[in-house]
Amino acid sequence: MMQSLFSIREKEIFATLKALNRCNFVLIGGYAVNAYTLPRFSVDCDIVIKNASELKKIETALGRIGYGIQTTPHDVQYSSSFARLEKKLENDFMVSIDVLIGTVIDRMTGVNLMADWIFTHSETRSLKGKTIARSITLRIITLDALIAMKIISCRPTDIRDVFMMLPSAVNKKWIIAEISSRYDFNDRLTRIVKAVRSKQFKDGLSGVYGAIDQKTFDKHIKSVSSFQPTD
Image (tube, rainbow, N blue to C red; front, top):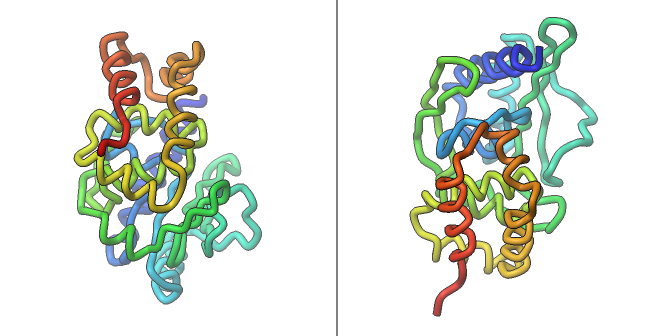
């Protein structure tokens, strides 16, 4: 049943992103992670736009396929200006898209990432489904910028994603510099290292990404442990 619900959600999210093909946005968050590592289940679909005028286009496009604005969402990671559009599927199952407008402000750290920064550090890529045999090409935040965002936020989900993506990072010095200019990098790294070395981390990781062999796990541990600033 749970697998079926994930498939229903993912199928709808892919159809929704396709419906936005004439809108100017960047995909971030959990679905963006799937463009760079083993696909994982993701509940949230987060996109960033530059201004409110673009939101009107998105509302119109999604309104045509049954979405409406939710006026009082409270369970969001960010404190920046945003809108949530929701659609009710079968058995009252809800699918939502969070649209962040102009900036992304992490609620826990207060770090502010402007939409211009996110657009600058984005690229057109293919996104593949985990539970459905579909793919879509769209604008997605770059791997290194996504890693930086995830390290800044440092929630358990973010730490798992960083662990999976870090070995593929293009420019680790750039990531460290971007984080350090906004927050205490060593504080974030300490949290991540502590988490990945805990006894329960691998089980939690497998629960999200599926079974991961020990050789691969050790490789990722090494990547995290060596992720240090250099002179």
